[in-house]
Image (cartoon, rainbow, N blue to C red; front, top):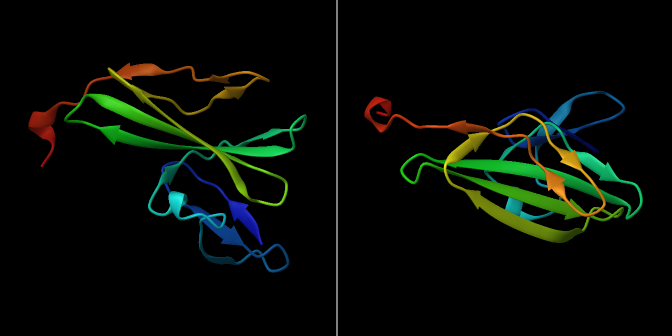
Length: 116
């Protein structure tokens, strides 16, 4: 099975022979359950890692929690890093260097009066 990615949603499991989706894909870790993932994953070819990102918006705190997950070539979670930004930020894509995650982010403000 192959993870199928889309923005602001969980990953899905894709059958590569039939192209049918087989439900939510958590990459064998409970950490991804219920997460809103970014579609853009990265592969660190030097370290043989798949790097994935989830976002949690915290409107009351006017913050964003950015969560980076690194998986080895066997699909085992080997790194789990969480960063909280304040003020809140939104972003669609990001970059990976040998030493950093680079997030070109735009500041966001949540208008709490418009949240039901």
